[in-house]
Amino acid sequence: MTAIERGPSRADTTSLRRIVVACTDTYGSRAALAWAEADSVLSGRRIVLCRTYPSGTAGALLPPPAAIGPLEIVDPVFAGQVRQLRGRLGADRIEVRIRFGSL
Image 1 (cartoon, rainbow, N blue to C red):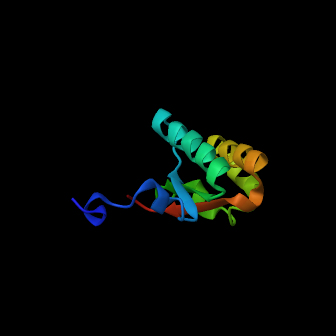
Image 2 (cartoon, rainbow, N blue to C red):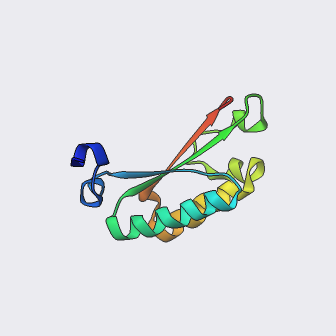
Image 3 (cartoon, one colour):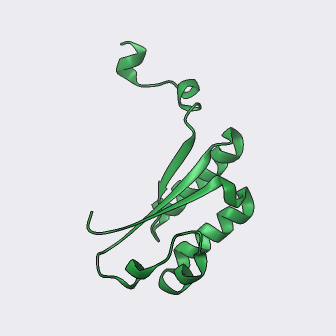
């Protein structure tokens, strides 16, 4: 089996610039976020936090993610994850992507 068939080696993947984590209020999501934070500390990569809400939810009226205040009202768990991660790693290393619709 060649390296292409196996996929990139660990050394190859460290050149990626971002770690993308889908955030929900589940154990698996929290574990993925903890792993992403640890990896980011070691690699210096940015973390992109993704959150999806169903169409028509109150969150559809949210301003851009940089304004975390309104998110506290609609989704305090996610807002807390963003705030804590930005506090530990720096706001410049955390991106937030919010989308609306069905998966």
